Length: 476
Image (cartoon, rainbow, N blue to C red):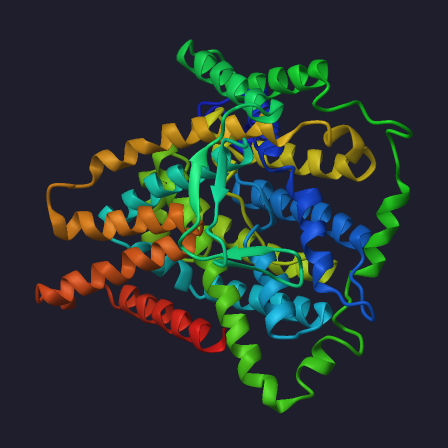
């Protein structure tokens, strides 16, 4: 095991990798319940999408994608159907655009194939090389704030107030408000928020005292407190259930039937919509992944100078980054075949990296834990979001270090960096944050007469982002 995962070379150990895997898993395990709850809304009374099918597909997609990431790339990143991408699948593709869920899965499958192609042809690698150092540091710090915001939100620390007549409730029961909505700190009268606060204090103290496995210990301690206080309860009935696994047949390979590829391309009037939707899926998926790798991999040394040189100069999949990008690309198509929306690299992997994870063994541990969720979902469901949210906040603190490298006193460098961070966090989107940074960077370089110094790939990526925003506005 030491030889296969190069544990000694990466200055890590089996126990450390196991703790890191446990930490990553528990910070992202919510997806096995949230994703099916989200995707079933894409069905219709005449063509429902099976909750059980999506549940099993979510677990299998996460396990397979993460296992490939660990074994092929030997990096501590976990994959699962992405939040945001599943909302786009449900509310935009199936809701606004009117695609059947089988057709939407076909679109995701195509997106995965495209991502494999652009990875194999080095386009993804070239994009990473084209991003200037200032924006790479901004992406790293921005992801830290993004992760912390997820943690603050999941902890229940925020309440939001919307002015009357400024919001609408969609047919799916989702409230959409305008910019008048105002966040505020809760009054901490709810047990959930108090539990999260206690968990945060425990983790901060343990990190300051340099206790090994601080985040994982904090998650366990907060879960124990939740059980003692009655906030969560031990599951009743059978703790082990293998029956649910068979439900995957309801969604697996569903788009190869009459509804799917066949129906999607039967109407020539929808071809443009199909192309635009695949483009939107691919753009968001690609830059979410690139942002995650840049933001967490370099600061931790997972993608070190030697790996960066192999990425830049090597042919084939010589570097860990190359192999990680390929693992991410294949996961999307595998997930679609099983019956779920885009599978992507999870930003919550940063929690495991902060816990000491440095190799693919961390990912293998996560994959095994996901597989155990098939028969043991009732047990894993005990851990509340309030127990894992503080870990994300602490990781966010740790990722602020990359801001030091940005020249904040030089406005032309500070402005694109700031826009990257602020849009990424407040807009709740890694890809949109990167888009904002690219756009403002190109505008500033154009105004200064230095546009020729901007890498052509960065200019093309910026134009694609702008095109995506325009198309989204026109088709909304």
